[in-house]
Image (cartoon, rainbow, N blue to C red):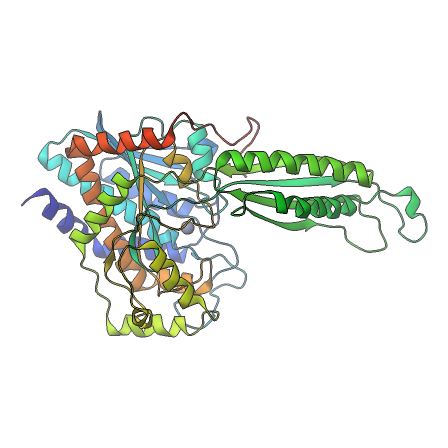
Length: 472
Ligand SMILES: [Zn+2]
């Protein structure tokens, strides 16, 4: 049996076990930095297969690294497993929380970590049989949803010796990602004023809420003068408790995003100045709590092309009539325009001509070649931080109906269903095959590294985190 067949058979043989694990994690959704159920379950399986486990990278209890093999090259697989608050949902096409207010896998990370584990398990068996040198590493990355996990792990240097990194994300189509994402900073600004009776003696008070509102006004004036693709969004997490008390404390939480890391840094500095101005104007005092930040993705065509080629080799995705019915029923609950948006995104992402008639298909089984000029993602991911340290490739596979809104209860339902399990198995196969090629065809790594070096130019990964920042 050749290596490719061994890998594909190895993963297929694990179908039931991987689906069971993904469902177990789905059944025990835990939000960022609390994912001990998923982390323990995955680490246990990897340890049983002979991987050496080390815990606590980046100062996070639910982060771990599982390693097998020795020497170069070192291929890393990035797995995630955190859930989202408030999205608890049954396996149903109607909104039915399993636990009111509970968490749910609204980004499919129950599948995400499990597929990467499946890939490294099958790869290890094949390398062992063939006596092939090199190291494979599974990175158990917590807290992706808060953009904390990999940023703090990267600050610890755990990706520094990687030859290449492979990852994926559940999605609504089978395609390699070769576009970029937005860099970002997440921070809170606390304003401290002086409490006073708002009717009796307002002149004795200083409103912390005024500080927040003036800051927001300043930020909105800044918007005109930042790169057009930038995104600035905020929530007021504390604004006082009653109108008749001048608020002594108020807090606003910002995300600031832009296509390049240095643009985010400039905008962030400007926002720090605005905060200071707002404090002066309102007669309050302020401090900034830096939560986290991340880079923009540095795409690598060698890695994207390899992953595409592997998906095209696997190309065995097939959904049942029952799964299509469930997908259609879910689609019927999407906000208007969602399927169109999913289709338009796909059309921009692939070099293949897509017929609008294809929009009627709720589950896309085919593998699409990626466009040489992919669109820029409006969101952010800390996979991007790894992409500035080592050549990084990513794919999405069909785990959800076309147009499924991100971070929604519909995503939870699809990620817990057999649709999600099929997408997971498909991703595991393509990633394992790509890992095998990277370990056995030195020219591939040389090409990936050359492109990485060219694209990075004289820029170097420099953690966005201030030294005092801790994962929270
Ligand atoms: Zn996600």
